[in-house]
Length: 144
Length: 117
Ligand SMILES: Nc1ncnc2c1ncn2[C@@H]1O[C@H](COP(=O)(O)OP(=O)(O)OP(=O)(O)O)[C@@H](O)[C@H]1O
Ligand SMILES: [Mg+2]
Image (tube, rainbow over all chains, first blue to last red; front, side, top):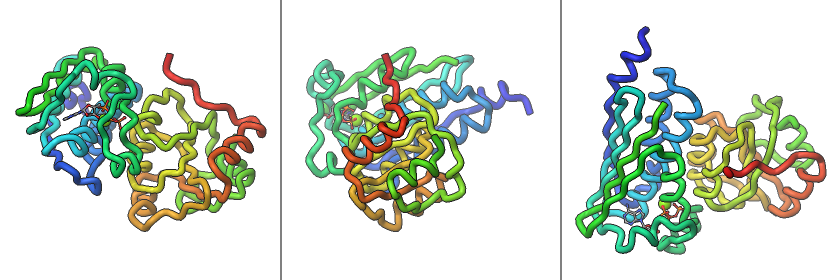
């Protein structure tokens, strides 16, 4: 089996449903096991798993639903997470550690530390966030 | 410290992952906030938590936590137990509170996790 060839064939896309806490996390879990199979380094997989999980939970919790796409290009894992709104009013505030608009209900499930976006940024080699009332889009690259 | 010792110190009941009690644990963390847990860089770590829902198993899976200890005698629902079995995460429950359980493990030599930076 030629691993590098297999890696470059990876193109994944998942739709993430708003408020679906039963399935929340399955996308990142699936991505993790696929990357493991093609032999990507554990440290890299861990970063990708954290990024996709935080992005997935943000779409479930804060948006009307969206998608996560992942592909491998050369030595980069490229992750696109986007949703259908309502968007983030103040991005620089949202990027601050500890800032969260999570409801009490969501906090009871263990979310709402306001650490998700800062975590994503920390794990990324490249990170871009765009948001309007039409939706929020994250572009992340993680190199290996 | 072996998971089995942790179980003994806490007088914990093992719910899933009985087969992994010989695993060596390096450090521990206590939190009820999943994003907080995801900042951990340690390997071979366990989590003590008062949270009792399937997302704790998802979080454990993401960063390969060795075990989750539910504090204050919390008993998990069937969906949580099923997910823990599927993901091969050891799940235990102790009657001690988060504070006491952490103190017991710490005084027996299990250190806290290192944090990123
Ligand atoms: N996809 C999104 N759509 C709309 N708002 C979002 C989205 N992602 C994040 N936000 C806003 O940015 C805030 C900060 O997000 P972040 O992920 O850092 O923290 P959190 O989700 O509130 O808590 P945590 O991730 O620690 O569980 C959120 O509380 C929410 O207001
Ligand atoms: Mg979040």
